[in-house]
Length: 229
Ligand SMILES: C[S@@+](CC[C@H](N)C(=O)[O-])C[C@H]1O[C@@H](n2cnc3c(N)ncnc32)[C@H](O)[C@@H]1O
Image (tube, rainbow, N blue to C red):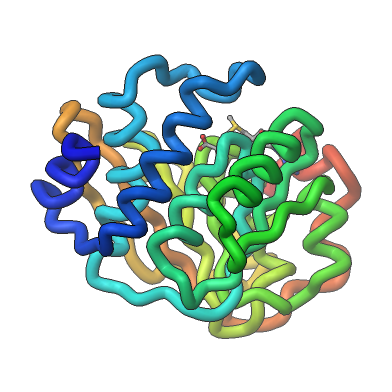
């Protein structure tokens, strides 16, 4: 736990002791999970990539309201955000059974009252929950044009989409022009940062400016197979 505390302090992330304890329990569950839900094998890299990477670009914010994490998988970023922003109500969405089982197990073990797990495809969920959420988040789920299509319809006008990306984000932004335009989303800010591991990361902050047309998202699989270009 000291290592986790030290790393977050080095990055200037503020925390309470109970959040460190919950995060440590989560990381242990993840690294010992029989479901093989992470490529990370050491606590060291998990602290940087699954915790610090998520909190660094949000360290000056106090997120509150409702948040939909699309393709939560091993719980990143949704579970971490639920731990560090207790005033957020987080929906952890994934379509895979083994991810959902793991997420439900961790939510129960950590007694995380502000997180709920849903097994569904994002294309269906966003269509059924139009304009409901203050935030949508995702990491390592799809390219930006696909993400915008499957996430934006669930976000309210004025709400934000927060996407964690690597150095290829500029190319993805160019490719997503049509998707942003069609789904009524604008790029607000790019928060770039470097992890102590040397990796360059960024958080794309986008804002929804108007209702997304009813025809989006298209049916399951199409935003991935035929992304808006
Ligand atoms: C590579 S994992 C990333 C997990 C986590 N977000 C992270 O950053 O480590 C991608 C996850 O997205 C989920 N996923 C992909 N497409 C999806 C969709 N259309 N609807 C719901 N979940 C989806 C997959 O089941 C998988 O668990």
